[in-house]
Length: 97
Image (cartoon, rainbow, N blue to C red; front, side, top):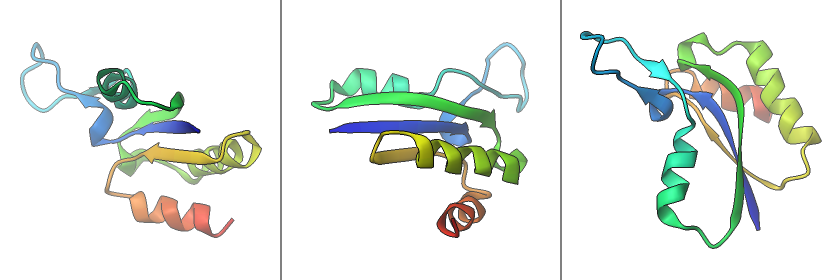
């Protein structure tokens, strides 16, 4: 079994640099890489980055990229890391296709 993680950003992928002070954040390495490397899973996985955005900034163009990736990819199991603010909109968009 192989699972494909699709990174879009959101809280799970946010890092809060200590040097900035305040509420600034950046989205860098996918959290899925960090998490899976500590778990030593018994299955294969890959991580594909679609975008690195706060979910409020995810557009229908980003959602279309997600849809096309899933449609055209050879995998069968996907986990999309996504912020909560627009998660429902993305799920509806993908579900309608």
